[in-house]
Length: 132
Image 1 (cartoon, rainbow, N blue to C red):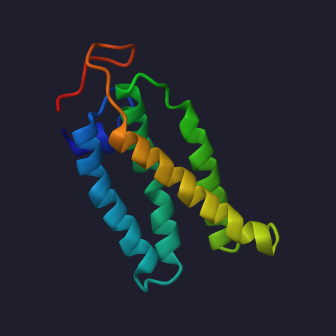
Image 2 (image 1 turned 90 degrees about the vertical axis):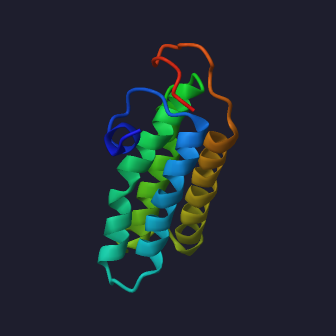
Image 3 (image 1 turned 135 degrees about the vertical axis):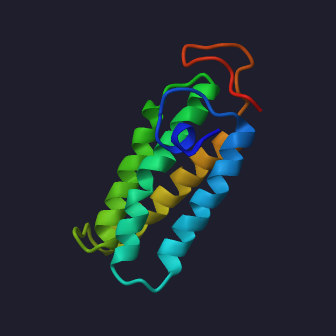
């Protein structure tokens, strides 16, 4: 699989093996941007990675026979978390800590679902099965 097919083109399907292999470097880059001492550009750089992560997860959901609409939940939570993290918005002390934690848990749940969910062996409405 090419970079474009995994992280840019939301159409098509991505197998469980391809998903896991692509998720590892994506998570490594997120960790680098979060923990590297690069000032305020780190959070903004991490926000840019939201698009390739959504595309990767959408293609994996397509392989399992689902639409990508459920990804709106973690995407909205992540955007709210970034707004809090960058001090663009404040929802109060309790929500300022609860929203990012919820975003992390929901996103991890979707990643886990993508790692353990079974893809459909036959052609579905999203295309032919992805190569293993």
